[in-house]
Image 1 (tube, rainbow, N blue to C red):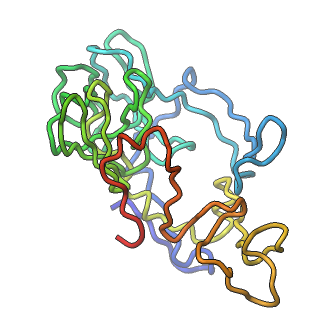
Image 2 (image 1 turned 90 degrees about the vertical axis):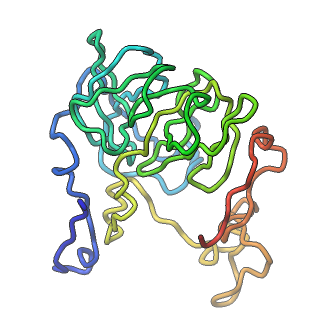
Length: 281
């Protein structure tokens, strides 16, 4: 286990944990041609209005151009490095193809420097290889899954996550998602074999508020602490209950406490075979 604990020399350090990256990464520097600068918008749109709350500040970061489309088919690639990416929880690796091209890819667990991966309809069922969902046997764990053929991996990309192939039926593959939802995806969509790397990411304890600010996360204010003009839960003398059956956001939409917030007419409803289980597992 690569979790590092600290002596409680201060209140912030008490209980704080970090990942021992020296054991998990290859120690290589990022590949410069696959990097570009990143401007922090602080959750604001082009008009300067905050559209995503709780974002801003944090350490300066550079983008790594990660390949999610995997359009180089039937050409094997060697994993040259295992690196940290500040914009995602999973580890990335530099894949060097036989024709000399280099691309960053999201790595699965148990893949080491020097291992080979390939994107092919006839690839073996081994970690890192990529195949169409229709050719993957039932019971296999997959990640980086396409929603539309050729559109690139959209689902199951964060650290430690995976989806399970539970059935193949009438040209569709049934996947059990990390949320416990069971969904149909057309069998010509591609997916990678395995579970996403850095599964211990969920065990990290930041320990103090300042460390979340280093990550670019700004504070969250409770609705009950606001005024009525700012939030439906605001106002009242002293501490008040919310005075309504459901907890809602400042825009009046149901939120938290395992409430259903999905739109009744969402386009992908026809692909969901079993809704996710909410509340305590």
